[in-house]
Amino acid sequence: MKSTGEVLGIGKTMEEAMFKGLVSAGFKMCHPSERRPVGVYMTVNDQDKLDVLTIAKKFGDLGCTMYATKGTAKVINDLGFDCTVVERLSATDTVIKLMDEGKIDYIVYTGKTDMESINDFIRLHHHAILLGITVLTALDTANALADIVASRFTEDNTELVDINALRSEKLKLSFTKMQSCGNDYIVFDNRDGKITCPESIAVNYVLPHYGIGGDGVALIENSAVADAKMRVFNKDGREAPQGGNAIRCIGKYLYEKGIVRKNEMTIETAKDVNAVKVYSFGGKVNSASVNLGKAELAGEKIPCVWKEEQIVNKTISVGGTNYDVTLVNVGNPHCVIFCDKVDAVDVQAVGSELENSEYFPEGINVEFIRVVNKATLKMRVWERGSGETWACGTGACAAVVAATLRGDCEKDTNVTVKLRGGDLTVCYHSNGEVELMGNVKTVYEGTLEI
Image (cartoon, rainbow, N blue to C red; front, top):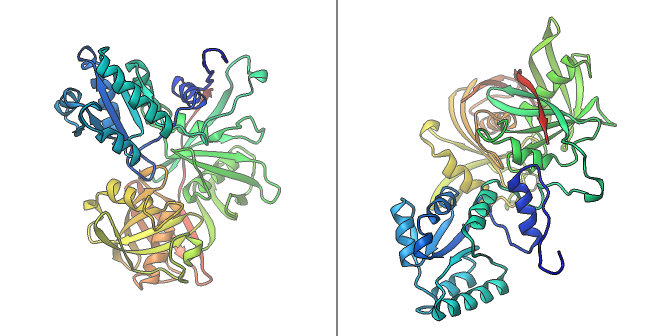
């Protein structure tokens, strides 16, 4: 409303609707998954200190850096989270300096009503407005904000709704949960175009416990150049150019649903048109293979900061540690690291650091590899936008290509890649093309209301 400033947010969930409302009201939304720490400054009345525990836990679980005045900081520290003490504004300008340095993104303030506290808030709020920092003066709103940040909404993964053409009832979407080696996807047949914002579906329903669960969402659409088109979206709503396991699952779906009733088919992706083979018995497909085309090795094709034709065993420093990396793009960009014990690697910490490092302007998938023998590799994988997954098809292909470049494997040879969810088979052909083979399974089917 123009007079008092209210805005309307419509979403599939309360968090999505509130995200839209806050952004429309001018709130600047930040998330710890961005390439810098997210800071929260809190100072609350004594009567609010118990209620702030829930909010502090949510921000702490998200990995936010927390600052607070002495009393509030003690409550947060007692909860088991690190919190830096920052004196009141009337005592020091430290909080202003932190704001100027970009270290504070959210302020939660329920100060006292004495004149000193009021003057502190006026100055703090005025400076926050100049810097576009979100200031919250109600704990229920701060609690909702923490839920919104946890939900990972951005302006790119929320649906724009035409309020002049609102649906009279919820849209019912049939889906199939499919997986290969534990790399699972929620598959939708979207040839009718009903799904207009798959990014929002990925963010809302891919998370386990709160949604269907999975590593991503895969859409089947019409194609003018192939039998069908596939689009893949990661947990954060970002579209992936390719998905080795997903495209093989789509082949099974197309065959068993009678959409493409042939064992050899072509499927278009954002990256290319790929040849897929399904192996059926009694009308059911248990395994499938895909030719992912030629592996890209040039630095500009990854992309990364280096311009060499090949980046093999390049030493880089991330988080104070050196890593020897080999870079391969097989539809998706991959950074392959060879190590002795993949199970000992802190995949979440190292994977996240590498994904968001300055070396890779568009992010990167990270594979940790142990060479068992010339025909066997062991692998764990960190997927950009999704985190550690039990398997990754293009990651397995990148691992075999990298191992071949190092002389650990040979071309035109089937190499077994052992992942947490099972085994995939990869062949790096002499012509530079990479073929991925493995099982594909349907987990269950269901209906989603949005």
